[in-house]
Structure formats: C-alpha cells, structure tokens
Length: 250
Figure 1 (cartoon, one colour):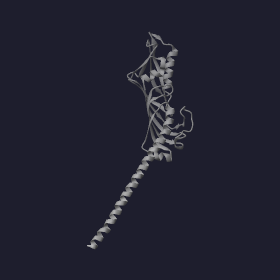
Figure 2 (spheres, helix red, strand yellow):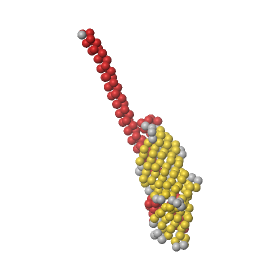
Figure 3 (cartoon, one colour):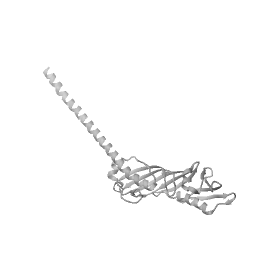
Figure 4 (cartoon, helix red, strand yellow):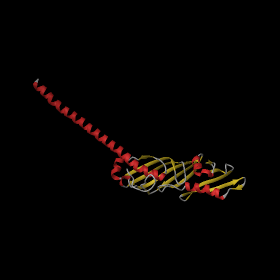
C-alpha cells in the first residue's frame, strides 16, 4: 500500500507541473496579444492623425480615413503604408463646393513617421458633384442646374430663370473641358461675359484635383456629375491648419 501510494503521489506531481506550465504559457500569450493590440491601436491613432491632417489640407474638408491590410505597428518602424482610403462629403477642389470623394492611395512612404509628409505610389478616386453643389459653386451666376444623362448635358437657369445655358463636359487629353451648346434668351444670345464666367468656373472646378490625380472619365448623371480620377507618384506635403507647409506634430 505504501509503495502504491508513493507511486501515485510521484505521478501526480508531473501532471501538476504540466498544468502550471500550460497556465503560465496561456497568460504570457494573452499578455503578448494584449500588448500587440494596444500597440496597434496606438500606432493606428498616431499614423491616422498624421496622414489625416495632410489629406484634409489638400482636399479642403474633413475626411474619414481607413487603412489597408498592413498593421500600422509595423509602419512605425518601416514608414510604409500599404493603402489609405479617404472619404469626404464636402471636398473643395479649386472653386468647387460640395464634391463627394471616395479615394484610395497606394504604397505610401512616409518621412519621419509622417511628420514631414511622404510620397504616394498611385491613386484612384471617384468624385460625385451634385446639381446642388454645382449651383452653390456658381453662386449668383445661375438660379438652378438640371442634368440630362441621355444627352450628357447640364442646363443652367440664368437671368432669374428667363434664359438657359446648356453645356457638355468632356475629356480632352488629361483634362475636362466644358463646351457651350446653347446660350439664348428669347432667341437672342446671352452676354459673352456671363457665359464665359459660368463656363470658366465649371472648367476650373473640374481641373483642380490634388495629389496628381487626373480625370479619366466624366459622366452626367440624373443628379449632377460623376468623375473618375487616376494618379501616379505624388508628394504628400506636411501642412498646418492653414495649409502652410511645416513639420506635422504627430
């Protein structure tokens, strides 16, 4: 009986040691996972604040930023971001107001963790410009805008809605041009200054894109315009709240 009892006690101790080692290993693994999660959260906040301030300055509005597959904890060591997706509901490109933008910037290489800007490898963007946004941009020049996707034209009410100006945007090379199709009041032509003023503002609004983005397609929709953009290598400048270049505080 003593021999049997001794053997049982001896075999129990290794099992207890294994159980203890297992518990310790699990605790270490949980602590490591928690540390990595906390580090990733800190890195994501820090990198996001750096990048957001720079994109906001160039897009002229507040933006929502999301990141690609790569953990940003690694970015803090190698200064590289796989991709950044930017969404804005009220971007201002040149004189344009009310542009809705969904853009993706790929292969970012940050300088000093983003404090001094960086570079972008390539980019794409989809821009929606509603008739309301176009009307606000043109201010007192027009009383309203209607769009016709079938003819690909925009019609502006001018001179209090008594006259109509019809234009058609199109891609020419790497820019968007706005052609005047019709401009008349009771069969008479509209003042040249009025027509050119509207067309010039529209053209400038559709050519002023940040980060080297260039239009590849423009489409008239039932509620305005949709523009597709594409860009290559571009600089991401460090800026302050007034858009002046400086070192960003991250």
